Image (cartoon, helix red, strand yellow):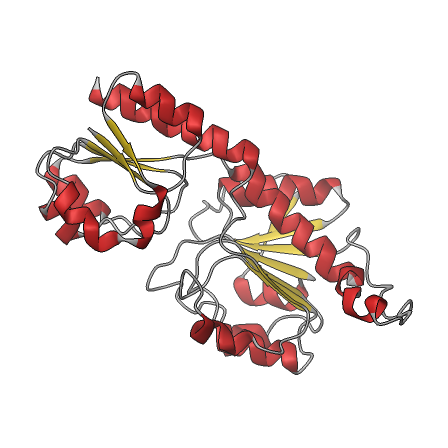
Length: 304
């Protein structure tokens, strides 16, 4: 049996149903206490980022052979425990790269230009033309913290718009040439970038990587974008920097608390030039089809 706990493209679900019994209930992500009792007899589990595949859940899954992740981050999956139990884990590597890259570039353009924050003033009968003039993206410096596949696609799109691309990633070998992108130390990247976009996993070393000191080290008026993992940015520190006008804007697609509760969101109240989205940078109609098809194929191959 295959259990799917979060939304998946219907064609991919139907493909799985042709060969296996499938329980498809996207609402299970909101009822995770129900999952342990459902796990006996489940050979494959398919999740997105909300379902927590913990040691306790694995203990309740004696028949589990593989886990499909409809996305790339594995923060919600106990990968080491899966490995010890012989449970294969399949992320959808590469299937939503373009979606995230487009999100980052779009956020950068919107926040630099600033005109799209004028709705309230316009509806009130005002004409804030000078305040909406904003800045062009061409010629600006994009600093990428982390330079994996998604960051490289972002760099390609940004370069096509005339941006200068810089990156910091200690895991990219020093002798590997990166055409069109210059390598910098993190401090230099923060100090010189007009837009800083984060592309790192959440680890003990990256938690609050963008804390008060790092945010203070950014170029005045710069834009910060986090479509990577919640927790990499100190959200309270970011809110303070935006209120004080230290930064030109920020876009957050990921948060320390997900889903974002009213209590957790209170720190963003009244923060200017801030765009908040519900962890959808990698989710478009097109990427959902690609991700779902990739994971369906991986699960079918493994179970066959």
